[in-house]
View (cartoon, rainbow, N blue to C red):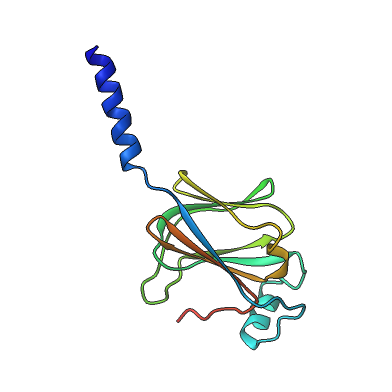
Length: 144
């Protein structure tokens, strides 16, 4: 009976210590043509003119192993830490016509909205503990 009680207590601590993953999605204006200068420069520099390509940027509050799966490929798999002066951690180019899964520290999984991805060139992921804000936009942000 003591073993059973220990098991119950251990499982209780595991469930109490787990916190739920929360995501908030924000959608910007959909545009056929991205027309601000910063956005056009980024698209040209990284050869992302193809409508099936988008930028995925990780911004504030990261100090984690970030893995990004794009369809069957892994496009990012590295420890990323937000640079405090810039508010920027890491980025990658994704194909927005394939499923995109973000895995944080091999524990938390976030799937991006596959229906919305093709409408936007820039996707920003911001972290605040277990709350992730995902912003879909057609305007590149500045990291200073």
